[in-house]
Image 1 (cartoon, rainbow, N blue to C red):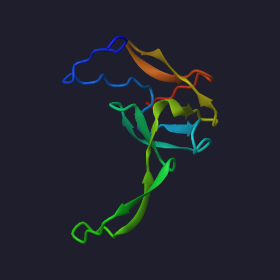
Image 2 (cartoon, rainbow, N blue to C red):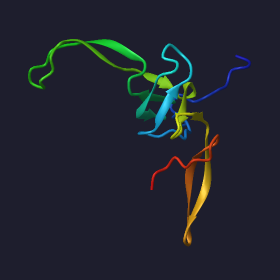
Image 3 (tube, rainbow, N blue to C red):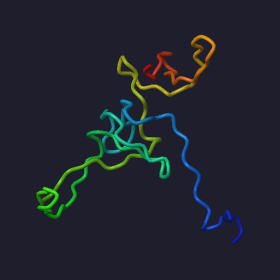
Length: 125
């Protein structure tokens, strides 16, 4: 099997590094929902995907469960989108890549996320 990367089956896959966090406002840049924007509800670093509010809606058949108060039927919910298909929105509504810079407050220095296009700080303190 020349050319194939040999990996062990019991080794866990490394988590995907991302600068997008839960609560960020992002815009979908490719796919069937291109142009839609919404808040990030969940970030799945194992698979490299995000759940965006109101984007990639799918229908799912749901069984009724009176004990939990769930009414049966067809429910609509968000599906995950790959990280590469979303970009962060700045305060003025422009898409931007995310950079990191050190912000010195007194004697302590901590890292903050900044928009590369505008230089605006994305982390709220």
